[in-house]
Structures are given as C-alpha cells and as structure tokens.
Image 1 (cartoon, rainbow, N blue to C red):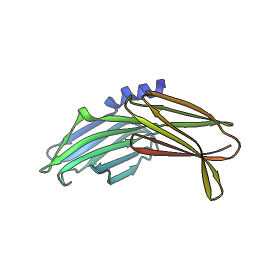
Image 2: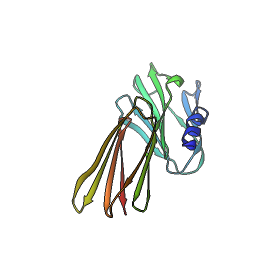
Image 3: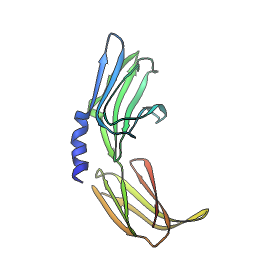
Image 4: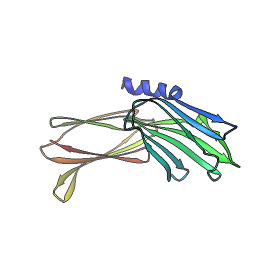
Length: 184
C-alpha cells in the first residue's frame, strides 16, 4: 500500500507536457516508465487513436502534432503495472489546451497467488463500486464459484482459498474489466 500512495504523489511530477507554439507540437515527457507500460491517445468516447508500447525503462519523450485532431476532448493515458494515469486535453480551432486540474490516477487491482491462496488488493475512491467474480474453469466451460460486490471501501483487501484447479478472476472497477487466470 505504501508503494501505491507514493505513486499517487509521484504522478503530478512524473508527467510533463511541453507545447512548442512555433512548430505546434506537443511533447509528452514521462519520468520513471518501465518496459511494457503503454501510452494511448483516446477520444471522448474511449476510441484509441494512438497506442505505443514502451520499450525501455527510464524517461519517455515523444512529440505529438495534436493540432490536426478534430475539435473535441481527448486524453493521454499512461498504463502502468498498477495504475492508469490520464491527462485530459481539448482541441479547438487547431489549438491544444491541457487541463491539469483534471489529471487523474486510477488504481488497478493487484492479484497474487501463493499456493492455494489468492490475494486481491486495490486502492479505491470512496465512491467506487467494485465487483469480483471467481470462475472455476473446466475444459471449454466455466462455473461461477464466488461473487462479491464491494461499496465504500478505500482499501480493498481480499484473500480467497481455492481448491486445486484452474480459475478465472474477473474484477470490474473504474468502468474497466480486469481478468486474471490462476492455476494451483
């Protein structure tokens, strides 16, 4: 949990947006990225306009020409291991404006297995609703073995003891679905 809280405090200083008015380009600079993190540019409907897989650890720098996008609302999304950072911006009349006050961080659930125990943890906002479903997987089918809806918890911590077998764990939170497969 300490690492999650440190991440919250770190994102504000992690992302830098630099706009060059002469060339009309926008530079996205991210410190402390890891290989496998992903960068997206999405429109207001969540449609992915740009996707890139980070290939190295350290600092990420890239220039984007956002002025040619149609007028509208967009986001840069930086997906890391346990979090998704969003940086909203608007384009109007070939002019890009970033809304720093609306930058946000969504924390992804973390699922870990030790023998027959499965640990699930997640940092959540107080208004967030979380659904956990555990399915036993058999050849071509699956059966729901546990379902739980969680409300008003800021720190979610669950431990499930699973019999020997294969399982699919589906967690719905932040209007996203996270799926993990477990074999024990």
